Length: 410
Image (cartoon, rainbow, N blue to C red; front, side, top):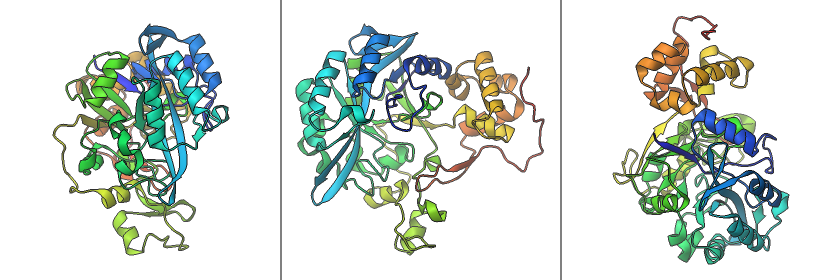
């Protein structure tokens, strides 16, 4: 069975996160969803690290376990510093193989920021210098630039990033383990930059609540250990790294350009025609991921990187159910339907990815089955997200004849 990994999440110690982002709830949702390996998130926070040490049992070097779910010590840091005439704001994911190394790392990082202030601490530390310092502590530490296209806080971000990866990491490029594409981009968008060919592209949820884990993830051939994961990522091992699970990038909240306050949503071509200014108030637009890719790409749209792992675009099962029911995805009806399906058929990823079409049609209510199949076949309509607003997705054709609203078999 494929091994699904989500390496970038947060804990209850990060701002704007659920109080249920603890090991008990995370392991519960990982089992429901079918995730085999989960990053702990926030391993730089002293209180969370102590809690992890108390809760997790060591399975092997770099891999810890709770209630039949594997964990890897991970965290995200916010590097904010001045370089080449501009303030840079870059988020990086760090993974470490042991609590001892994590403690040593945190002692070093504490020289550059207050680690207790947030699960994702702000560090006045240049990216290349941080990578160099981390590798001095242990060569087994992995560093992955996070959501590399997000306008704010990312490697290529339009507001505070860089135009070239070399400008950010300088002589430490060889110590970058992989690149995280983020919710608003997918592999084909990244394949358009030849400079990214050397890197394995990973996808993670960046979840702030347990129900959001796995909304993007990585699918490996089999269960592996820490050093094997490091080797697969750094060698871009297509045989063992099968594919990523992706948001439809249009659904990401920074896919197109726009100005949320005025409700202005524009394609790159449209915003270029008005000099990236809001058509309503004239203020500067937030330049989205699609526009930024267009600016930096040296390959045409549709280019396929033959040596890269594949990808599959999915929609969370709760969103499919909500669309079928015609209610909000946080409603009690959606939760009830989700629980019924996962208890009867299998994990969320079993339902979305692995179960045969015939079984889906047999065991799911008709509208939900149709929604799952539509998503698998890419038959969805999306109004792109912009300036912090998620895109709006239509999975089922609203013009079709209405079916029964009561969808459960119970």
